[in-house]
Length: 530
Image (cartoon, rainbow, N blue to C red; front, top):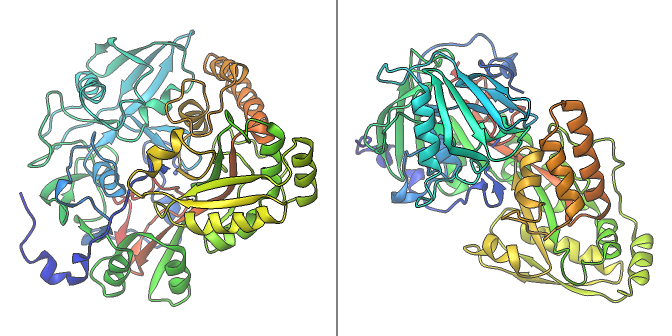
């Protein structure tokens, strides 16, 4: 089914094309990722002061899209537009709160075994759009579909801890997941990006997808428009809106111009300069989602010169983080402290903020026999601020006697290239739990270990944490791991960028505390038109 043929005659600014790679996944780690609590989330709570919700109307939301190859298959999505459409049409068992802890969605509750290697999930009473109940069979089918080794489904790696052959339904609304090893943070798996629940046997999603989400399908034209209608029977309450339309506008200029022209009410992903220009103008409202994107330089710890921890510490001390935030992010963010996940659950905020100290950096380099060091810093225009950050850090390093050569990489292959090649590179990640960041990027067998951090004791601490049922004791173990990383890790985390949205003055209820890709980000079932 397709949208009306006059879509681009009515919205001429949306014809302009451009490309957006999903930031949380490769660079954004995809993105994900809100202060939600229980099943109802916090869409309304976050909107305090926006007035009484009003029912009705069609919201038009502009996102960058993926062209004619777009799909509504929730297991295939990679772009922010895919994530927002999937969230509107489908549900996951859990999702991420503002602190990146898992909160229940279709799962009413979860209970671990004493050994943390079996988890029983109890589903809430929910229905698909055709009136059929969501059952344990649907959950198992969905996860087994995602785990198909012949397919490139996004959440496949996240589901790796589950032994899906041994897992089984123990009732119509209960599932026993058998795990390959103890996993204390198993709810994070349930909340993984792309781990949506579909009907048992479903294979076709682009003609008339049937989910259990807050909106029902109306029409879909790949690369152009998706129209959805309110699901009055949604388990979390019916949306305030009558209809929701996603329109594709790949270039940022097209999104902001459509918003200013009244052609859309929501423009996703604006750059800092645009946000600053319109912040005080009054025609539209700028929403900043804090701590949405970690900004860093990744040092390869398995090769010279960064196989010497003194050199890594020297580079930590070379960085003027505020200058990087101001210059590369146009001030739209806050300083980092060489750790991922500022503001997230388990973040070691007790560690002192590291500041620039050129004198000590020089002494450490001299001790390491690295005076006059020359390094190549790989960067690319693949993410906003990368080339600017590289230039700023090159100048900062020169003050410590370090020569940095900036090398531009391909936007198309950058994320793949930097995993194994080079010694120093620009790096970005979107919101994800700190545990997921560790497991995916910092263990000896992690598949996206850009810093090549490999330490048996660190691995053992992670396994100990995953086998620890008491949350306080587990938090202490994560604290020990972060202290190691802060002292000698390979990520020089210089900042956390805001995710910037533009919304019409008539749009109310937009969450302000939800990092990109979390539950309350793009929470269109909780917004309304005044």
